[in-house]
Image 1 (tube, rainbow, N blue to C red):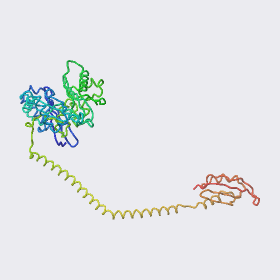
Image 2: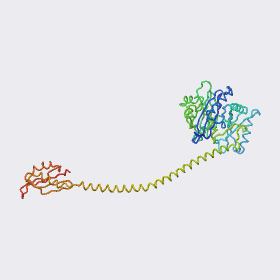
Image 3: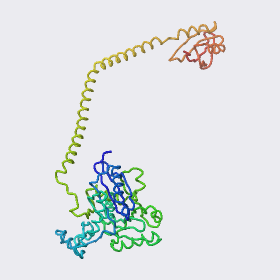
Image 4: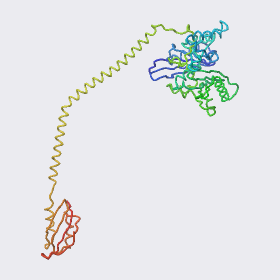
Length: 465
């Protein structure tokens, strides 16, 4: 299969690394590979790097498009409602806001922000601000460097999960959803409203507290802080994470609209990846960030000095490759066009060469049809036979010497026989024995002819042949 681009999402999930690969083709995204690397902080760096290198080599993955997902406790979320008038100078206003959170130079923050589409239009400008301490981010980047990984994009895992959900749901940006990323020992709850992340909170599970109780409490807290409109409803709560399948089985009957995120994703994937889809959801969202150009919330915490800035000449191979592909596609289309024209020309030549033989065959067929009609007519004439003489000869033989005919008529095989006889009762049995006559019946009464002194008879019959 031909892939146009691939993206690798790496999620830092407690002590593990979750790595997913998403490739793009003409049909859409393909979730091709996933691996969980346990205990990456405690393991030997060289051994861990070799394991990751083998995974990238086995799956034939590039390293130029890696998206790193940071754990929730390392990222600071701030929802800001700024005056509408600061829209033209928003970057400077955000910088002042970030500096107010930096008590010392050692606590310098890296940040990024995005203007949200919801809020009170005309009154406030809602902004989502993400921040991370410089020391924490550089620590993560140093570990990635030791593992031979150089992220091109760094964001919070929950933001990537929200971006993937919003980007893959038809009409999802017009509704309100709750996303719950369930991990061992806790979960993170995110509210999406109007196509933007408006609430994010991480909660721990204390002891054996039922999941239903924890989820309902966090949902009530989220709704209370966001202040939904009276007519606004939560479309559903969507679960992700390795604990989601088990928790969903326990709470689906008690929490309406609760579902797994795997049922909403339409990526192509091998059958084996379907079983790890819930566990890999956040890392898959990170890979989605690296492969999609139009993100609902593009928040990159990687400072500009750490980013890869390609010079213009670096795009030349891509442009050349694109032109080659276009030339091949054009050549394929022209080849089919020329081939069709050649075939059409050959077909016309074959038709012209067959017109003469076809005309002769049609002429012969017409003559054969005419001769067949003449033959049928002659056979009809030859098969037509006049049986009247044979019937009269038969009647002459059958009738007694004292009997004679006065009237005989054959109308389309229906015979009428009339005559005089000295013994009319004996005539009917004799006529019925004739091979030329059938259905012989007497017509009318037998009466005596005064002139001849004999009885007059009339019989009706059908011609047998």
